[in-house]
Length: 125
Length: 364
Image (tube, rainbow over all chains, first blue to last red; front, side, top):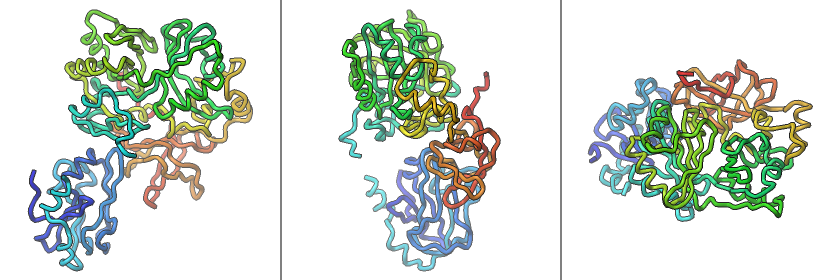
């Protein structure tokens, strides 16, 4: 599948929107497929200030717990509460309803340092 | 660990064809899952699944006197095991700790097969050889045998379809020998899931054909991931996690498989003392019924402000929908119904002690 062009990526498989004032963050379809069967999601507190690269959330599959890192710095202004009841949404819609949290960027230019969809796709080989 | 150094199952190509994700396990490159742990777990609980267990080790012991010698090496009573039957037993060190837990097949009066954990084949063989009676044969045939575990409520139907002209599926814990194109296979009505099922160990060269026949019968390929959640729901221990060289079978709650009435066996003396004084800690079941993260091995357990142990195994039970785990806890805390806490990422979550058989089949 081709990746949404409005997203930028970390090589640790997080994505972030580039065309929103409060961009959403999630994990890539490749990452959900590698994890499979997401059964628990731990989300950051609204209002928490994150630095780029900081562990912000935890996604747990049956087999393992994975830290999710903030792609850029900013304040958490909303979290996807629906995932608490339906963590499997990350498996079925990683780039859509499976988003984790939204940030108010502290420095939007940090987005430019992230992988483009094309570069991320290449990194998957 | 580099994948280059890992043993390959004779079914490796079949796994890749079936979409397996392979991981290093006990020195083998084995499937952890195909479609996913949850659907594979469900297949075993509701229909039928199959696991590649080719990584398990096979040690043959034979000749006159094999029974008497094995009875001094293993905890269960070999004299009580009839030819054509199998039982669960343990190999201990001199301190009474567990080297390995295994199945002992009595193929004939004087021919035995030990099915041992992949990670312990070398250690088991060395421990046995150290005291081997010169008149007996001990053969490590692990490299020659593949293995499949067929598990689930549809097992009997699958076996009939697989072998319409016989053999008949053996009774529970019964072993039969089955001629195959490249040698003998051993079929035993045993398993590690709590479901009906059988395990078959067969020549490497015959494994692919059997796999293909089972695929054609719609048996679901299942990986190590589901094998772990299924065994944990039954409270079955995993050596290396729940059993170790520093824990005795009495601490692990496996006293049923230790025949203290036998004159002697390796590790008996320390167990006599443990019996007399009572064990200090016991492997205990824990459940977390409130919403929370999956329980996992190594998480610390607290009784109030006191650290009382660490989880040896844990998961979110796919059948029950809540957390289940095991931990060695002080005997005073090891009875069902104690309220404790488990620390997960610096937060505490309530757990309750329980019996280790977490899951009960709806029909039983």
